[in-house]
Image (cartoon, rainbow, N blue to C red; front, side, top):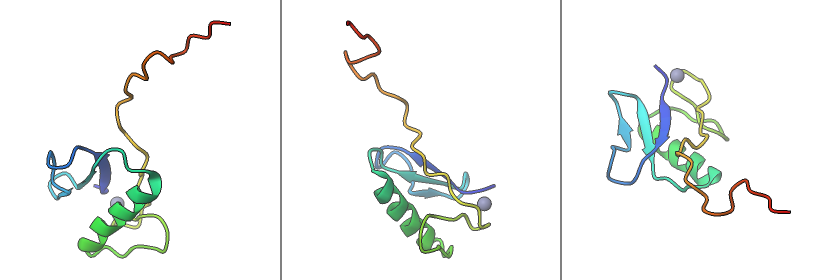
Length: 82
Ligand SMILES: [Zn+2]
């Protein structure tokens, strides 16, 4: 099973859960910070990382796209008055 990345509030999940091979990052990081944080965790796990991006221990590229449930964006929804 490949390492996965998910976003969870700090303290609600271990940074790395070996049982589920999941890295938990705080929500709201931009992409570059996400990559940096994931790489830091992977380095802690002694998984060699390339110069850019983040790799699973098997060599697969990790999917770092945010999986945060879409919050309601208030009134600026899809309504176009004019
Ligand atoms: Zn993998």
